[in-house]
Length: 309
Image (cartoon, rainbow, N blue to C red; front, side, top):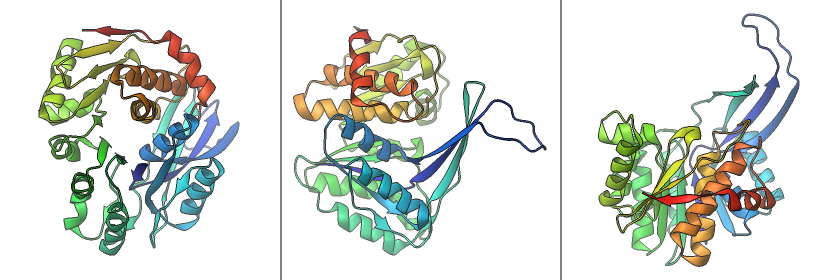
């Protein structure tokens, strides 16, 4: 089973506007609401690929109810820890073909609630996978900020796999523990290695360093220009950019990449085919406001061209 863990889920309110005047009353042309969170998005993509998952993490208040109801509607199993505080609401302004995001910090989570989630995750077994994604909410106990490291310890103790798409400040320790996949972007690499990356050659160099640090595979994205894939044999690959006229959803692309990769890898254990599906899922996501369906993902697969560096 694949368990996706979102510590700081959200309800994302999208406001589609033609014009925005600061300091004045404005009107939206359209609005809609979706569940948000990196690992939640992974579960939703996996569901489209007919791969069962359990979505867990922390939910509270009416926002938490909305998240669970939406996932249940998509036949995604949920087993969240209920917290006293309510989940956050984020605002996404869609204006002039650009998306402006206003993120809330999120709820405060108690030491007892952290313990409940870790106890739940102790059920993972050999062959299971934990996908960790997203930011860490405010924690009442400072000692609990090692929660990602503790999840990794649980996975390793139970011979389960783990994948991390988490903030750079947590990622270094997790990489050294041997995840199946990590998904940093250029900015993450700059933080991890305390450097400035200006060329694709530099990006390739530091991407290989991520694998040498302990990750089995790594996908490094660099915005709309594409991504690179690195394996544990020292190989590096680049996916040619697929032309997309209007990118309407760039934020969820990296989540879709993880879903596309692991959804393929768990079935056929072929990392290059998994990477191809990851690129297809990300490209399909860029073209839709929400996440793509299975057909939209599969339509992109023939267009994906991968070259060995």
